Image (cartoon, rainbow, N blue to C red; front, side, top):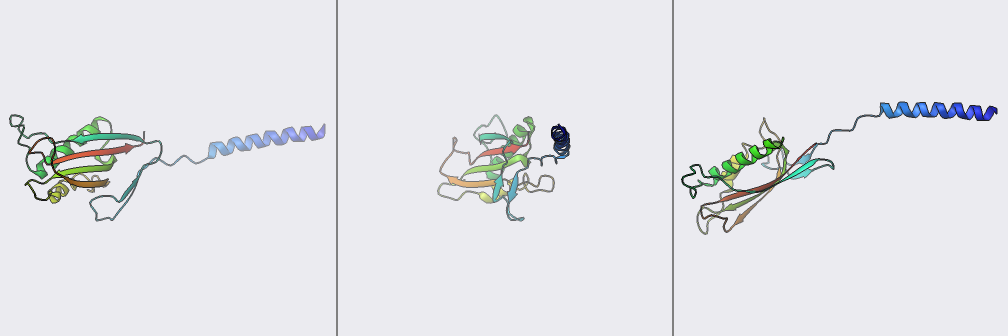
Length: 167
């Protein structure tokens, strides 16, 4: 009888101790995208998205004409990149996200002159105003590809993106 009473007291103590440990367990760390790369680089080398984050895929986005009355006049690579990233920013903000949540981009560039080279310098100049700034320090990973053509003869830029944010 004495052993069963000791056992019951011991089990009660163990349950109380276990309950106390469960309550004192540290909170889970917040979900954060890990990024690596050169501090002076324009893009991140890697981005690791932990399980449980909301992931959004943004389809290839093309520029809007500055003057809707002239739909074929889209501007140069700089103007088109600014148009696209501004639209992308508005789309993300409408979903409760920001450009800082972008983890991967693919940029398709067409040379402004036949047989020429893409204007990646102009695209990067605009890109640096949206990423890696004091106000928005996050940089996405990115691939930039020169292609022969896009949907319209005067279109030089199309960008797709993946964004991730803790729920």
